[in-house]
Amino acid sequence: MNAGQDATAMSDVLDRTFVECSALGFQSVLTSVLAIACYVLWRRHRRAYFLTWALAWSIYVVRLACMSTFLVRRDLFWLFLHQSATGVSALLLLLAALQISRGLVLRPIHALIVPLSVTWAWITIYGMGSMLVAGVSATLLLSGVTIWTGVIFWRERARVSSDAAPVLAGAFVLWGLHHLDYPLLRGFGAAVLYGVFVDVLFLFAIGLGLLFVVLGEERARLAARTEELEQLSRLLMRVQEDERRRIARELHDEAGQVLTAVKIELELDGRPEAGALVGRALAQVRDVSNLLRPSALDDLGLVAALRALADDVTMRTNIAVTLDLDGFTRRPAPDVEVAVYRVIQEALTNVARHARATRAHVRVHDDPGQLSVVVDDDGAGVVAGATSHLGWLGMRERVTALGGQLDIGPAPAGGVRIAARIPVGDAA
Image (cartoon, rainbow, N blue to C red; front, side, top):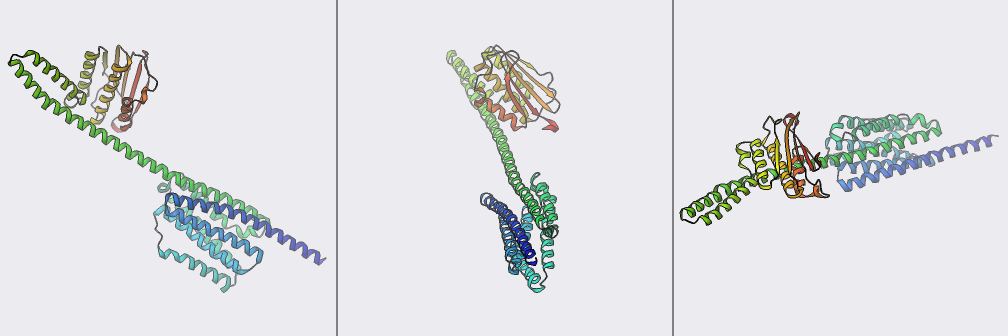
């Protein structure tokens, strides 16, 4: 009878050991995947905390392997290695959190965590010979450091990422609390499966948090790059306008004066035909100068420049251009004035070249917090692929560089409507 009971008890122990080792093996596989993922992320992004995480999870796998071996062989040496790996992996997790939140740089002194962990494990296992002290100290260390890591991520959530920090903070804090119930769960045997299952869930959450960290950094890097490109675009357009202004002034002041003097000399010399030719050349120079940078825009403002533009287009193309400026009550910033003028100028140029229109209507209106610009025509409408031409792209770039929006679509009269909204005042 006793022999039968002993055999049954032995079978129960073996079954329990097999279940525990299988569960720990599955957890080891998942943790290994996490370690490999961190290493790959370090190779790609060269962030120091990814390498520290890879080391921490690798040593955590060693910890699980040592525990499985101890359950099978019941040799204190494997328990000693388990306790040592527990301390090292826990402290590495904390260092990784400090690296990502505060930019901590690993130094040779941080290598002391290895001998300290090994020394404490030796004292508790071989010096004191107390399994209770060894288990409680390892549990408290792993739990405390894990919770501390979560608290760090929560405090630094604004600096890390709006998505990653709360996920990692919650996962580490809950996982740290879960470490405290291991001694209780191990006393129930099969309940270890529950403990490993919860560990797997937390490891999955931590892996998801790592993904959010990467995505958050890439998003921040993309936003910074976009901001740099927008600043470069605004700078290029400002430089372009300055260069246009300089060339227009040179044409008007230098070439214009020389041609005027030549025209006068020819007329005084009795050569009216030659003077007329020079007069046409002078008119072309003035037209080019006006196209490059209308003097009215700098001297008299946007309203005067738009009226001159509408009169010029009407005279040159026989397209009746009407202006509606009744709702335009304030003079915007110079960059906004230039953008509005160039959008309307390009729109009317496209009407004259491609629309086969007879009328065009321009409306500039002050809306709350923004300046609204609408150009309608009664032409043939939008041609397929036309919105990808440089003229359209240039208009869109000017508007978006100021934080605005430009839309191109059909006009009520059957032609094309170009509508731009540019923020002004406090909304800019």
